[in-house]
Image (cartoon, rainbow, N blue to C red; front, top):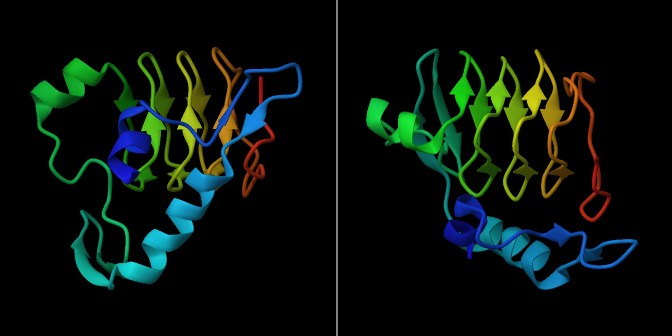
Length: 140
């Protein structure tokens, strides 16, 4: 399930109706992953971490970044299970598991995209420090 969220094949919330639809079973899958996975040491450029969710870009090389088509400025942090669409720029920011950041968006410096948050296409710079959006409350 987490791999499907990571690839964008599934998303926790979608605009299928006027008000949008939240897929509660996917939210529950994200929460369940915290219960069934143990903490592990995660190597990072600035530090070591001890967490249940690996970082999205841990195994990316230059070719993979080119293929995916987005830009990541250090020290941006993105957890596995978050989807980042093409033509997106991640300034030093944090994107949590289950989040969906759509095409052409800039997540500006020190912004936080919360668990299962949905950021719409071609958003102006998403810059509110510590901004959280509950799952199902789609932006843009």
